[in-house]
Structure formats: structure tokens, C-alpha cells
Amino acid sequence: RSTFWAGTDASFRWTAEKELRLTNRLLASAETHYDTEIDWEWSAGGELILTSWLSAVGGYHSEYGAGGGLRIRLWSAGF
Image 1 (tube, rainbow, N blue to C red):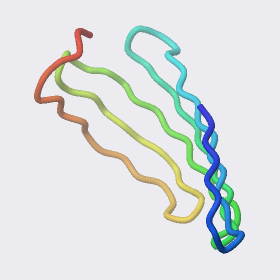
Image 2 (image 1 turned 135 degrees about the horizontal axis):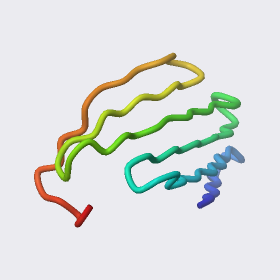
Image 3 (image 1 turned 180 degrees about the vertical axis):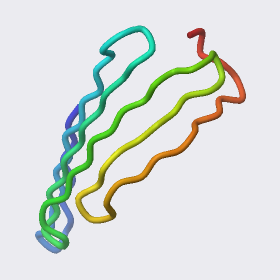
Image 4 (image 1 turned 90 degrees about the vertical axis):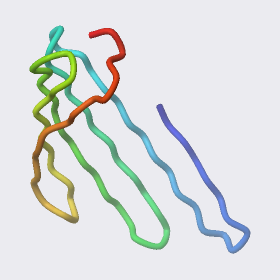
């Protein structure tokens, strides 16, 4: 997926992102942004689905560094 935004002051923002399902329980994602105000920014991450309502997630962001945690789904999308 890709998006483009242009402002009336000649500023713009471009974003591209992709998510891949590597296995039934493992997902990978990547995203990149270009903004005339903040320049380039990117992130990459992964998700391991543990149960129908719980996943372990982790990622890296070019500005904020690495992080991880748990994702709890209050309703399931049918995993």
C-alpha cells in the first residue's frame, strides 16, 4: 500500500508499507515514509500469533529504536 499527501504550502508526505504472512502464525511488516518536514523514516517488525487472542510483537523504528510487547485482541478475526 502506498499513499501520497500534498499540502498547500508545497510540503508533501509519501508512505509505502507492506505486510507479509510468512506462516499461519508469523507475520512480517515494513514501512517507509518521506516527509519534507522530517525527511526519511522507516520501521520493520514482526508478529507471532500465540493464540486466537494473544500475539507477541516486536519491531524497530529508525527514530525511536527497538520495542516489543504483547497484542491482546478483544475479539478475534477468525485466526
